[in-house]
Image (tube, rainbow, N blue to C red):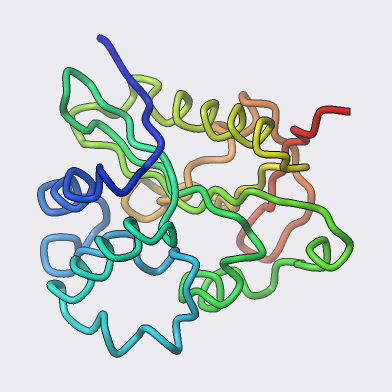
Length: 200
């Protein structure tokens, strides 16, 4: 199996939305495809009127990819997308819908003291490609690029109790532990896991 990890670029916008068009990624995805728009680095209050329909979300996702507001990595297997990981600068995403709805109780003070954090928000792996290590490869690539891009930490927000890939799109705790992450903080339902990546 030949897996290639590619950073999401404007040139890959159409590949990206086609992946979401055809890939089940959460329990209601046949009726409500997210295109990962809830975790783009735009202010949700500004954009919510644009994403009320599936077509609106799809078009907005293309706009976000081309504008650099939706960031992450695609895993290709034999020229077909096998997986996606949304990874963006934490301080840029504090007003996005996903943060305000799901992650609002997580500390954010590091941005005020100059600590740069890359956040891993979600994974989508094609059903036939699950359990093949693709999420691990994507996460490793996030961490490698975070080093080169001058981040201090990579951070993730898994549920304490993992149910399945559709419910727990942020990935299981063990995915992060085996990649060198440890618990930094916890809420009632989630762990905040961090890995230091800054070169000293």
